[in-house]
Length: 333
View (cartoon, rainbow, N blue to C red):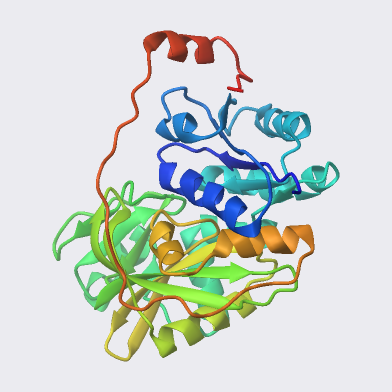
């Protein structure tokens, strides 16, 4: 069988993704370990991977070089980023990794920039006639408070995982800070749509998931939903992205026939395991494309599959953690 090691970057709590990638390798019929890297030896997903590596923080100048060195040493064929802050670095370094035979499942710099900055996301949506909510700055609201539909959502331009998101009721105080944006609340129920975009720019499969419960910004309960309008909207959005590639997701509110896109994430979403279990085997289809094999993509994922997440624990001896901390390029054979 072909060797196809995969590296999950900023693995953190993504134990389910590590397990899915291991299953994907088996389903495609290739031999390859699932590696994981993180800045902290306390990242649970490191312990669930076949091999683990400690790397510098994404804001360290040596981050990309450290990951690239792992890929060269281990023969990694596919890197799967999971953290918003590392996406621009990987997008800029795609050619460097390609030179050593490694594909990064990340979009190009333009699409990553659109997803990283919520103001840029809004401008892109408006420019491409994609439905969204009204957005502005705190100064806009302070200048004409009566022209806005309250309550309002205040959030950081470059935030993720719902960190720093606040709901401000009418009469509430809004600080005029340059790194904040303000949005009117979208009506209805929030959905996440997983998309797979191939090298030729095509988007052969999209999977909407309705959010039933969210914890710390990530879906804890959800259900897959066949929804023609949502799927058509997702394909329109995919076609409008300038250099998209790999797995991405859109956040969309659904209120009857009214759809409002609020965010684009140029990476695997935390709730992706639901789409995978429903039959949307995006990692397998990515592996096939990287290997140059005929695609087995089928749009037959299961409607109405519910995901109910729960906590699990990984137990590690302190001596093992100390050993990991002693080396910035530790790997467990």
